[in-house]
Length: 382
View 1: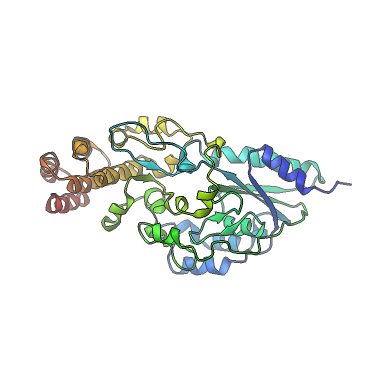
View 2 (view 1 turned 180 degrees about the vertical axis):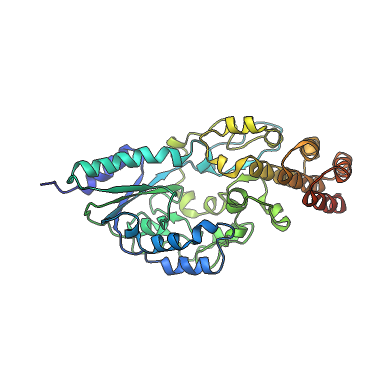
């Protein structure tokens, strides 16, 4: 006869595996699926078509489809570093900014072995027919909704899950299991109150009043999931962000209150990642990019997307000393996507070097979209 699984034992094991939050919920339909479906119907998911397939909708509507006989879901959260934890390097250089969760190793690689150990713990205390399935942002699961129901926190106005004891700098994961576990209780209150700091701070006004995002305007979407051109009217809003964005979390009082520079040790920052030197990044070859970002979340943007973002950030600096680097990219980079955004950046900087490179490229670049970017840049260059 298998012995009952003690919640304290489960939480202790989760803590030993590096997870700061742990709760349990049933595989009942998530409470906010209808709101999610309406978000999809309005096209607010932008170019993320994989979110809106029939199978994806069905599985998010009914978590029991994820695991045959699934009875419980262990919801977990691991804290990553506070974006303010690392001071700017003492360099006289134009620097980019990377979202804090991506400073170290990729959680998609880091989490599965730990989740499997937790699943094995559950299996070791149950009968031979035990089943489990693990997820971390890798399948059709409404992770935030499940975490909210498991008592890990509440959904803030910026759409992030906020823990009342730790803020929102958490990555979520789940273990679906056939084990019958006692659910933990959700929070009774929404603790955002009347605060709207995240909404006011968003540079593109992508945070909507119903606690959803217009993904097509979100800097995280634009710099990561978006594989094409960044709309020209949104490029200035990127500022120095080259991968993701932490603005709406950095201004949240719950993160300000619970800021801990020692948190997120599993995501130890790699050298040169949190605040990269932009002109160096712009010259990364495919081999150098793959080497620098091996097992890093930044590979999600791919080299051409990352260098596209770097070019925009350079244009936003106003630093004309970087014009030669952008000119080199415009005239030598094989990816049209990068060349087009380098042209825009040169148009923002202006000056003799920028104009000379734009004029030279206009007569030689074989891509019509890049030529259009060059013409607009020449018209706008100061």
